[in-house]
Image 1 (cartoon, rainbow, N blue to C red):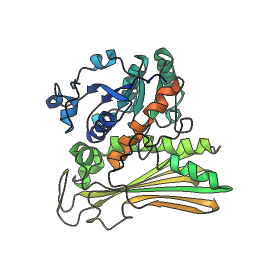
Image 2 (cartoon, one colour; image 1 turned 120 degrees about the horizontal axis):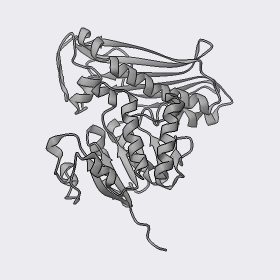
Image 3 (cartoon, rainbow, N blue to C red; image 1 turned 90 degrees about the vertical axis):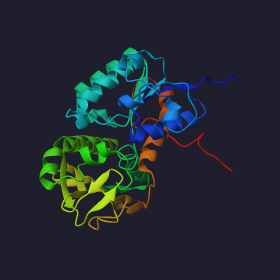
Image 4 (cartoon, one colour; image 1 turned 30 degrees about the vertical axis):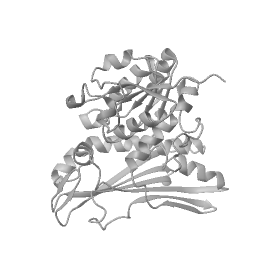
Length: 352
């Protein structure tokens, strides 16, 4: 049998998730790195492999978007900070994704777009037009959303005779998260209560849009019509000073937050997603310990708990990289987790 040529991959952004993704691409048989887009001027001109502690890959990092658009590639792993970090909204990411799709490249993104339908028919029409122009496909993914708050609950409902309420909880420890941009600038830890309340507004809009995608996807898959998606959030102040990878958390500054997103039907929640973020779970006693929980109320009742995901960033990156072959083989268009084959770690197993 003829050997299939490797799939040509572009890594778009090399932040906390992008670096894991880049390492996975370089290590994976059947994938060939052909381009890397970076935002940090200090990374421009560096070899992609050497930048992530591997041998030279022969691919030089660039900040030239036009150069990337002109690069022949099968798939782009699109993993920048969300547009809300820069004061924008999802339309900024939409512009970039449409350009990539129209240039003939499939796109896997971790900036949302798990269920683009939730952004309205205008966004869907633009994405579908870009896919038609480039003969390409789009898939939004991650660990949550992208797996824990949508794929896993839907898989469990295959055991249900009746579903009354779906509940998903994520509790994450940011103690070792290396990115100050994410932990401080976006999530808001280490800020005073006053600064946090003002600075978190764009992040609140991003969070609401992001998790509304998951809630809407699950509801549509189960043929449930939601009236609205409701969001609430609150925060906790540190009682003592402590250090985390992203900086110093002083007493009296924000050290944790809790977000709840509820898809309502006639005023009652059909699906609830609770997200708890802690600067250091050993220092914040309020709210649940780190891990993921999925609970289905109905017949039968079911609870699945994942006590630990040791490297959530690595999991999000792996989810994207593992999806590349399936997306490249799919017909052009928008593909949610409902219409792609299960992405596994095939090709990643190492036995001693």
